[in-house]
Image (tube, rainbow, N blue to C red; front, top):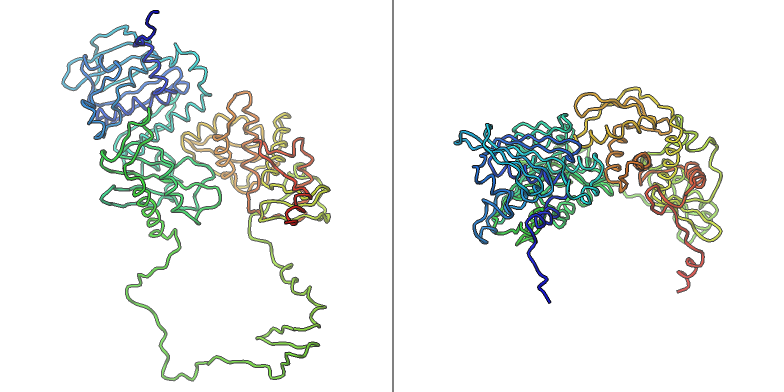
Length: 617
């Protein structure tokens, strides 16, 4: 029997490596920009077309390469960062494995121009599918320029699994953010389809964060700084009141490298304990500096996961540093003992005639054995005891019944033009036996037991079906805002909003662009009672970004789902009995009342038998 084990050809091995390192266009951007940083670049320009599927161009003013190095760079495991295995434990550069260029060249049409300062001419190399087509000397500026065309042209199965352009662009923007934030001293520009999305000048850390995420984030940033023998921490965390419903602005950087670390994330979240609204995430941008010998970054192909030698100790340091910063900036309630040694203690005057002493009042006629009538007076109130009071026990609840409802946001059924959404009827509560539990669930008895309804999911279902009706008819009344609102978005959200703008206009929004990444909201759907259009748009984009749906043919449905979730009443909203009544009626008028638009259970019924069993033990 002949031997069956053989070495893979380099071209196949490179394609396999590409599957680990180059997952999408954003991976190409990450690897090449990191190479530019390692080359000492102070200016990096990125161009992409069709979210990088057809073209990616990255140029820098770094050190450049010699003709020999330029050719060697495309070989597998060719690197200038490592000479021995021991070097793996002292890595401070971004790239070090030498797989990136070989992997990219295996699955794309690649052109390279590079020149060192000391060279008179530069080097041009053209490679397609790992095959070198040309190498020659050319006139070139100092630095390096890559042009990547037709990514995955020879791996159609991989190209097929690329997402829509908006999704792939979002991933490119995320990678640029992860590189731009820890490198504020580097000028970075990003153009998509020749439109500038980022033009980030050299600056400091705080200004770079503001440049990346917009001016609105500046007011929420709380500085963090801590130095220990193990590591140094600096950066910013967001104030709890600016926390968002979905994750997205949480960043850890170790020696300038972005990492994911769920364990350290818990340290930050626990520092916000009892400070955050339910189901919200604070922003944080934390930079760690520590000895590379105490970490192992060679545990994942994309190098976003790192092992720490003392992760438990680091957890404690992170938690304490964030908690201390929140306390210093009056975010955490605390007792302030710093009174400069001066404590105001009232001193009685020599003439103390104005001082009143406590008075003890006694009812000398009180008889504890008198069960017919007796009363005890305290101040201006009289409390009766005994049998006579049994006829008036209801009075104990009158004051509670007359109390105002909790000061939570109320949902206004039937306001504006929303009669068709919440029902034409505006009659008072019909008397159904209902209870709102913890301003989250609605309880009502049914024939088989007790029905429990999730009020937020129920409202999402009602809104979703209404929006779908509107989208089918392509006609809806827009309610104009008395004072149009201006909303500034980060580039990723701005591009996303542009991509769904036509559908939002069909739903009744009146939104138009107003400068770079800025939009004016002049009108909202008449079927909604919107007090804050800006908040609705921000929540809509967050919901849309995190929706599992991605197919173009389902885009309209996806927008309807996202808008319903963004517009539905929040947990903790007090509902009047007639509002609960109408919510239930409209829920069961829906075609699918049992499930929310994203497939979650809206209601459940606790069977009478189950209730009886719980009392039989």
